[in-house]
Length: 553
Image (cartoon, rainbow, N blue to C red; front, side, top):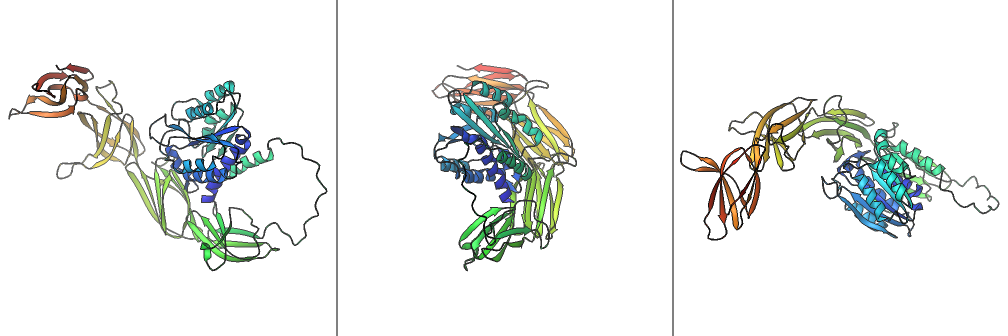
């Protein structure tokens, strides 16, 4: 399984680079490092596949190829400006690119249009021949127009080409970014599964770049003797003895049988339907697919092909997480698979994994919702299953007045269960920050708490599984801005005194300037000065949806 994923990503790089990338004088690889790269292909996160594939592919590139490396979405979660040319195009950059990829964090957005443009500019595409190879598993999320950019780069470039690899995209998604390649004379290659990849490779290999006509060939060499063969080992891994091969990929390793087992000399390795030619002798063959592993000993001769089947004693899982019955797969849902001997936690939306037989627990978490199931898996069993979390979706926004201006990034949210405990408190369920915050919640009654600086309000709401709803909270608040030269700090109190003649403190701040949000009402501002100047009390009123400015001298 891990091998197929590696093959997919490695071939994607090879395909894009050999097709057009390295034919150019200078190349920049642009890698999608957004949070969606945690999603999986055949049981392994795409980010791991990309890292390993880069290392493998770059080892085979010419030493004088000038290759650069750019990434986006690897430093900040919500930024559309998080684009970085990490390795400038230069000869011998393979190790630097590999190290850079290994250190990436995958957590941000997808500003692919801006990234391709920056890569083109770094290559001085208006002056020199240049190629950009974009590998992305998602669509533009920062408002860029990839199609328009492709036309712009083609019109202004001396000889500019963009190749695009859609890593796990659907056909419809691929059409939305293929225009970058189409408009620059490049290629769009969809690598969503092994079959699509094989077809893309066949198409490319069958139509290579034109090359000089070869010199006249000498007379054909004599045909090999009957005893000479091209391979002498054909391994196959099966889910159970006499059963089927796993649909996920299989990684084979061959070790010298020298009494050290698989800690001894490593001889060769390969993936899936592979045939080996190994020197005559005794060996240990290891097959790995996902979390399952099998090994067997074999004796090889130079003139006979040996076929061997390794029993993984495993089951195959294909799990899809859906928020409710009939809903699309939710890529934010985490799928955790606890199998005999280990756990796989980095699956989002869908998990395809081969696991050893025995008790296996599958847990799906989406927001505050969770669903789990424990299975006793038998050898050869194939589980193709939807896991329904059972949630509804809620989007929350806060407004200063009903129908008025929306509060922005400074709003904080807390969701509580509506029912109070015996001590009068409520259990907190989840939290979030900013406008348009979204929550996945199980069915039930809740209370939404919205807080913007010193203003806060609670609003009850109900969640129904399978429904999407808006919770719009009215703060009934305004903004206070204060400027007081020489001030050390401020305290704000409610204007009304209690029966003891004391006022309730609402908030405080330090410095000569302050700005805060307050619920509509009457207040008193107490300004403390750094000099011997006495504290000053300033009464003021806040009106909902309005800004109040005070100058204290």
